[in-house]
Image 1 (cartoon, rainbow, N blue to C red):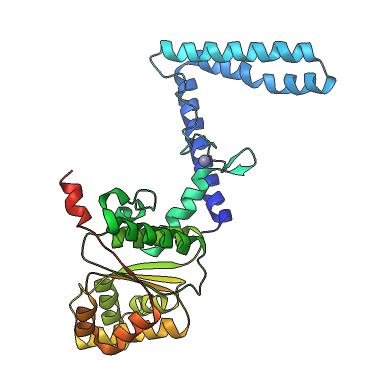
Image 2: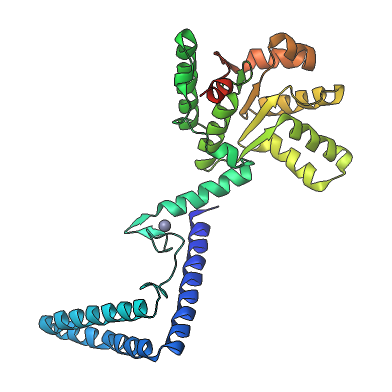
Amino acid sequence: MTIQEALQIKNRLRADAEFAADARTEALCAQYPEIRKIDEELSSFGPSLVAAAMRGETETLEKLGKDNLELQKKRAALLERFGLRPDEDAPKYACAACKDSGYVGLSLCGCVKKLIATDAYRSAGLGKGLTDKTFDNFRIAFYEGEDREQMERILEFCRRYVANFTEESAPVLFIGKTGLGKTHLSAAIACGVAEKGYRVVYESAQKLYDTYESARFGKDPASVERTELYENCALLIVDDLGTECSTQYTAATFFNLLNTRLINRKPILINTNLNKAQLEKTYGERVLSRLFGEFKVLLFKGKDVRMQKIGG
Ligand SMILES: [Zn+2]
């Protein structure tokens, strides 16, 4: 999503909020003629204000301003008397900061950036459970001693990876036992790179194989398209390699995908609970030599963080 597209969405939200507010005002006026009378008086201020401003009549301007404010107060008091909120028919904007204009002063409002980021997460395949994983909420305190030193180095590497990301960044392998934060840091990298506008695909190894399986012999066009994305996107992240039901076919598929991306110098981030021997057993020597020969390998250390979190 471009900034322009995000602003168009905001404009629609703004128009909808104002349209709904107008309808509420109309209903109010129909029910309470006193309100209509005040609104008519209020709308007559516009031309008088412009005229006074053009003639440079500051005193008149001040008086008009005061009268306007008085009328608005009177209107709010009336609404309260009718048991309604003073802002009963004010537009309900999705973002109070920019009133859905997309700008606060001359700067883009945070809601526009959020809209673009959310869209990037969605197209990366990052669900809600993953988009809240950041470098800042990675709990380094769960790691002790040498483990912590190692994890601090990894965390720093990940931050730099996002900051310096290009479509030719190095391939990366996160390796280590379960519950050591591999998914957390993979997701944080995915979000960070997606926010920079790169096409990221985050996929579990199982889903990846299922898609290749459906795409076999061109059976399912959507799956074929997705496999092309695996090969061509700016950053492919494969979560939990080794948990899929592996067959000769999945091993060959994985090798081909790996090869394609490495030959084209496209980055890929893989995380796995398998150790070196298990990886070799599951995917064969060819894959192993690619992973340990060409990837930046990061060994996650520590005690199972998830168990520690459950323990308080
Ligand atoms: Zn906003």
